[in-house]
Image (cartoon, rainbow, N blue to C red):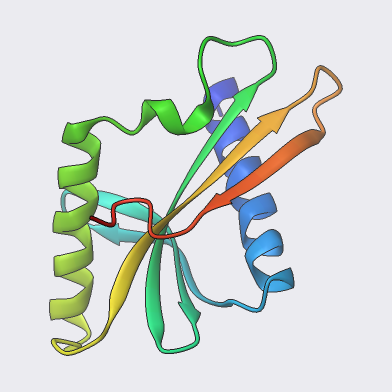
Length: 121
């Protein structure tokens, strides 16, 4: 597996653990659709939460969440619609959270930030 894919998988595992500690229930990791995937789908109270995880090594340019472009955001919204349709959840309240993880030179996370309702207006 390529190094960036290993780092991404590691970040998703750390994110799921972090969300669980915060009281979220993890419903799915790596939800696959024909046109992409959602890193984590979780429940936070009444909210269905689609979580995008961005993991970067310290010393890189910008913050991990800076990698979420307008194009990526549109794709995540389409993936969420696909999920809601597949599981017949048309009235479900949902939101998009982002987990931003910085990893040190030793490979361990040095910062984990949850950005709730990252796409909110």
